[in-house]
Image (tube, rainbow, N blue to C red):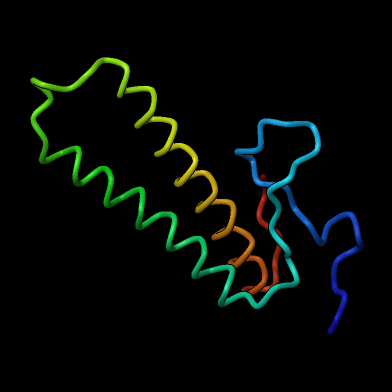
Length: 98
């Protein structure tokens, strides 16, 4: 396998990590198609959740559900965007700004 990235750039932490050790990472040397599919999967899940919320009536909802829903949407979309950015960089051969 071609080690095109220095060791400290091979594993990029997801921006959604809330710890100092960044346990969730992207292997930038993984197959770009797999990285792309992982990103699309998360963006689709977020989109599906938004579609469901758009169709629901919140009369019987609990106010405590709102932060839970927004947190789930944040994680899905942020991780999806991080993965798509790496896939784009790998497939296009360039570095996007942060």
